[in-house]
Amino acid sequence: MEQKIEEPNQAEFDWIDENLRKIREILGISAEQSIELKDLDYAFGKWLDNHNPENEDPNPFINAFGIAYGQYLIDHIGLKWAVVTDEHGTEIAVHGQPGDSLVFPPNFVSKRYFGKQKNFFCMIYPEMKKDIETIMQYNRKKPWWKFWQIRSERSFQKKIETPAKKCGN
Image (cartoon, rainbow, N blue to C red; front, side, top):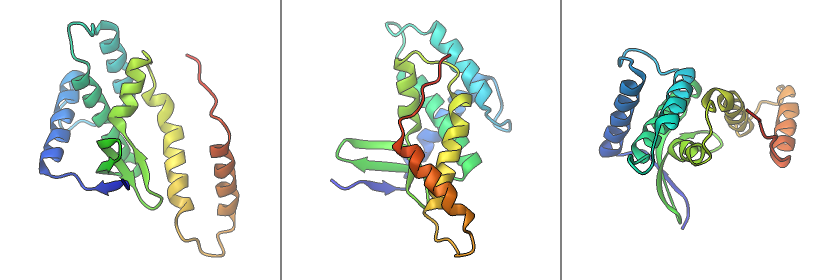
């Protein structure tokens, strides 16, 4: 099955809004206040320390933290909510054009939950932002006089061909 990227329907937007309300409640902030990555890091770490998977389903929290991170990417990079369907199923994502940049925020948080990672939102965001912006820039048609972009595209290509370094905390 070919990958299909669609705009969420109203029920999916309502689910996104519900998760944003939940994370605002967890963070103790109002709808007028912005969600900050440092606050997500703190709250996720605190929740992870106190979470008992035998007594509490982690999925609502994983979704809430993931949706909050996705909204942060939308607000700061200009991505949009999307529903992605492929041979593996259907999942909520944030999507950017040009370049078909896709991030699956709840899945991103889920992997950190199972790895018991903390303080990853602030750490990963700058590199993710840089990579997404490079992909979007790389896929734009460039005027001939913007020769300096060639260098950044080559360095990006080299970067994606080189295994990522692991951060130790």
